[in-house]
Length: 77
Image (cartoon, rainbow, N blue to C red):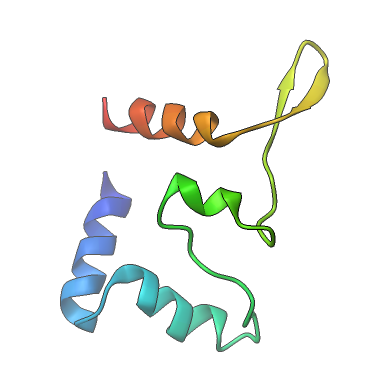
């Protein structure tokens, strides 16, 4: 909950979206010009995005978009 509040306050004080502020004030300043903030689970379909893995049954299995939907639903409950 506090991360959401901090994000909201940052947007209000910075007069820009959180994603834009993180990109311009953090990522670009440290030279991470090809990094970006994912704003949707559909962003995972891009070719240059690291893919998630799930540890299940004592092995790593490729994850998919559904793990992010699950995480989102878990957080807002």
